[in-house]
Image (tube, rainbow, N blue to C red):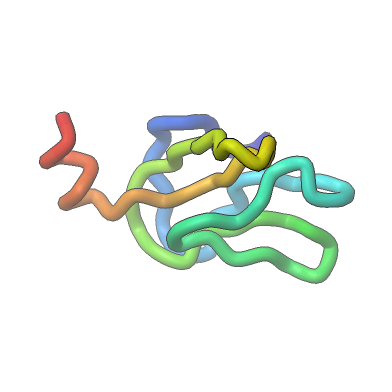
Length: 69
């Protein structure tokens, strides 16, 4: 884990280094061929648990993150 929930990231920042897909890419997240998750937009990291049992990593844009607070 390189960045935790609520931390600010910019495009290209590595969020999670992993083997396999323990965490899955969500909004504004890309996945490299070694399953590394990286930010594709500026914002704050957010983790989401879905009913299918998967945990998704998202980057919420800064404007949306401020509105939510």
